[in-house]
Length: 294
Image 1 (spheres, rainbow, N blue to C red):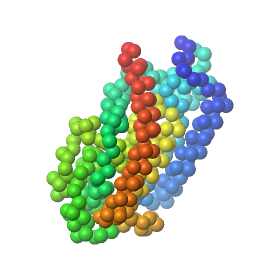
Image 2: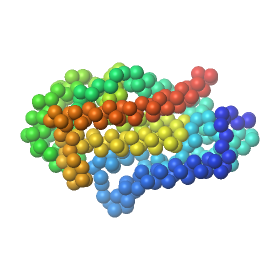
Image 3: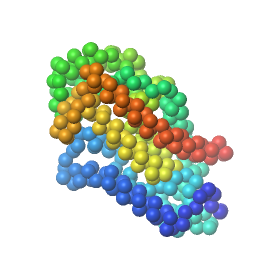
Image 4: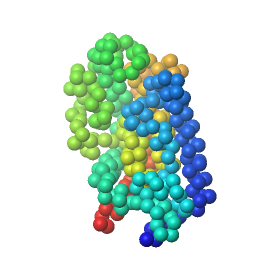
């Protein structure tokens, strides 16, 4: 069987790309790897590895993306969902991937497309993290003190409407906070509720990039990772936790000034996320073409 790749990279060309990817991935994950070696934890950055469950080695593995073939690529030939043609070109086995993961890809596509098609909502002001510790006592999700104490945190939640639209934030609300949210969120209505202004929906682009496997080129995966890390910092700066131990100033969303700053950050993240979401949609479409052709 001859190669079906739209683009074929020479050994020198693809090795240069792979090397650049590995170097960038190593820089992005250096802190995590060093902390693991020392038995330490970072309450902000380690979220990307612990919550999403990805290891630095997985982030480091370079994929050319769907439709790109590699000459003399023995390592890739041994990876799952790769195939080598009779003329020696190794490429993603899109048909096999579509057969096994097509339903999941279609669901990811529905969510990404629905999110991309909505106007960003900028009125939540990051109160989801506050709702996760509302009346929680000592049962906190992170080993950091509350900036306003428990009483001040509870008062801020009660003074600001909860309008969270993301199920994977809402599911961590305390039992006392969940009924205060304007929306009853479930996994079933996620496609109908996710919107591009949500910080957690933006961080999830990293998750979708990884779940799309070798269909996603390495640069896109790392772009999603870098954006998710930037978002996570703002997420925690706007949270009720005191992040001064990390040299960070709070975004005091309980104040008008803090609300304004948070909304500004949301706009910027929405702008940065849009082209990444579109590229993920393109990868989904490329995979689903193989499922439809069957």
